[in-house]
Length: 130
Image 1 (spheres, rainbow, N blue to C red):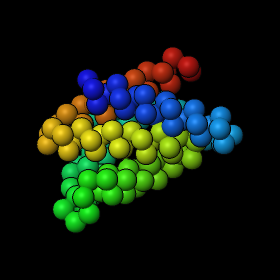
Image 2: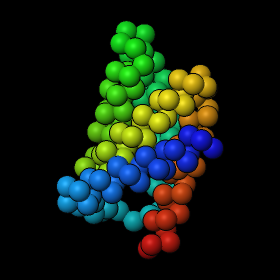
Image 3: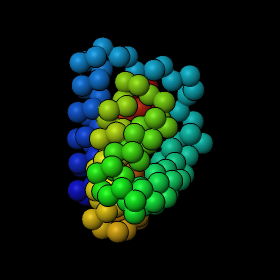
Image 4: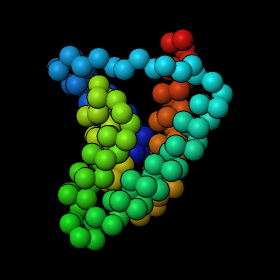
């Protein structure tokens, strides 16, 4: 629960800073919210992203650089992979929170569940907004 709430706060702060502080608009989504996209975003993406950015990249860097550089580099890559400049700081901060949770718990499942819940909440908001 901590990973989810801290991640949501980090994402919100990052988006507010970038969108309103630097006046960078959120990109227009060129596809509709289909069941395939919802399932992929909620289930598949969190598993793949956490395996790549936390388990592989963060863990490998941690052995050579220490916690902060490993978390920062993997979080920058995580943010860049989302191709959303307006939310890039939010994704970076979200990555930092999830690196912390993974490092603290040594359990990738905790971070995957937080990521799934985070993406599910985002999909729900997109569906409600229309």
